[in-house]
Image 1 (spheres, rainbow, N blue to C red):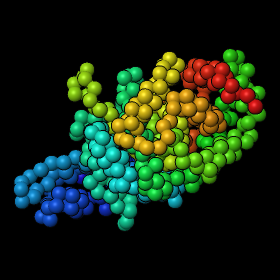
Image 2: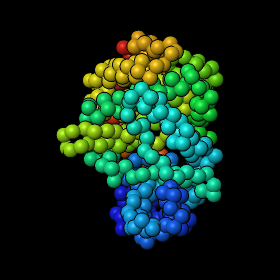
Image 3: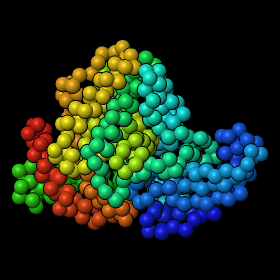
Image 4: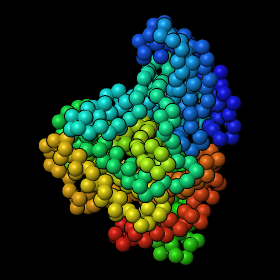
Length: 420
C-alpha cells in the first residue's frame, strides 16, 4: 500500500506506515467523518507527507484513498500525523512530552474559538486546516484534509518573498489578536498551554543545546570582525543554558496577564507555513501549521523567534523594523474589530519588550540559526544533524551564517544587548 518514493528525500521513519494504519482504520475514520456507516476502502496508497527538514517532532504520511459508499465512488487525500513508535533517538527525545495533547487541543478547542471570534467580527480568515479525526489511544493520531490538494505548497526550492513574509505576519497578528481577546474574556480556555520549547522533558540534556554556544564563541575567536564580541559571550558561555532557563522560568512563573501576553505559536519557521496562489502572480493565502509547542507567553517570543527562523537573511538586514511594525498595525486593527475590551498594546510598548529576553535571543542566533542555514539544503537529515557534532560544527562556520552573524551582532550591539 506504499507508493514508490525516492527515499533519500524523506525521513526514514516515514517511508513505511505502521501496521495499524491500514484500510480498516481509514474506513472507520472516513465513515465516522462522513456519517456513512457503509463505507469501503477499495484502494489505499501511503507516501511520506513531507520532505526532510520540513518537520521533526512527529511522523507524517499522506494517504490517497479510493472508497465507496451508497452514494457512489470517491477519492480523498489525507494527511496523517502521529508520534514515533520505533525505538530510537526521535522517540527518546519526544518521550513524555505533551506536544500531541497540546496540538490536539489547539485543533479541537482553541483555534475553532479563535476563528469564531474573527467570524463574529466579519473576518473570514482561516487559521488552521480542518482536522477530521483525533485520538490519543490506542495511538496518538491527528488526520487532516490535504492542503496540497487545495493548492498549498511548502517553500523548498526558493527563498520567501517579502510579500509572503508580510502575509505570515498578517495571519500571526490575527491569531494573537483573537488570543488576546480570549485571554481577557475566558482565560481558563488557555490555562493548560504552558509547555514551550524549554519545558520539553529531554531537550535541555541534548548535546546540540550546549554545543551551539561553544561553536559560536569559537567562531567569534576566528573572525577578526567578530573578535570584539568574544569576551562577552565567553563570560556567559559556561552558564548559558542556566541563564536561558532562569530567564524563561521568570516569565513562566510570574505571568503577567497583560496586553502583550498571548497564546504564542511557538515554532514559527518557514517550513511550518504553506502558501497558496490563485495563479503564479496572485497571492491567495498562507496557512500556519504545527502547533505542538503553542504556549502562553509574551507575544514578543513569537516575534523574536520569527526574526531568526522565519525571515530570510535579506529581510532581517533590511526590513526587520518594517515587518514588526506591520505586524503591530494588523494586531491593533483586529483587536479593535473584534471588540477587545482590555488595555491595548502600543507600538512603543512592543518595541520596548522585543529584546527583553536577550539570552533566548542569543540562543536562537548561536544554536538554531546555523541549523536553519543548513536546512536550506533539502537533502539534509535534520535528525542526523542534531546527533552529529561535527556536522553541527560545520554549520556554525558556513560563510552565509558568518555574514548573517556579523550583521546581527552589530545591530544587537547598538541596542546595548552585548553588555554585562
